[in-house]
Length: 114
Length: 113
Image (cartoon, rainbow over all chains, first blue to last red; front, side, top):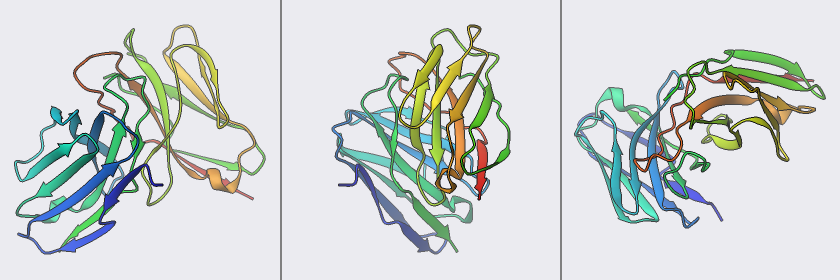
């Protein structure tokens, strides 16, 4: 069983479209995250939810809107896609918000905006 | 979060021990040192975490000196499958405000025959 699963794995879309990426974890973790890895391989946090509540919201454009229907799911919706949104998006989860918890990452969604 | 510095790349051969050193001069009292491994087209994978002295698990060992300004990840007898990017992070202690990992450039380890 995949611990943190993301769908789709690949997403190619045109500029201006709206798309969603879904994430589910079956680890019973309370905290979930979205990270973005750009072409230079830098991983940056975008959002974090703890028990469905938003606790971290980095300086991400308003076009990005996370939604957590329950603590096992964290979806990412992106409006009006731009070329610069092309990247690999990783979902992750951890047991809680303490730093001594290891994260479990999904395998990523490669988004290509053309 | 304290910034970490590590070599951009390292090369090794199968069967050798690999030590990757990470510098974290400004580490806070409550920060832990955590290492992640990332293979191409995969998400990072937690390897090991420590606060001070030595920690060992089935994958690696982590050495943290008393001043905690640096740490060394030790991979015993590497194989080709250990070729990956290794990230060193210093992570805040219990904050109650969210656990935000700040990834640096990582160290690209290449293992050859």
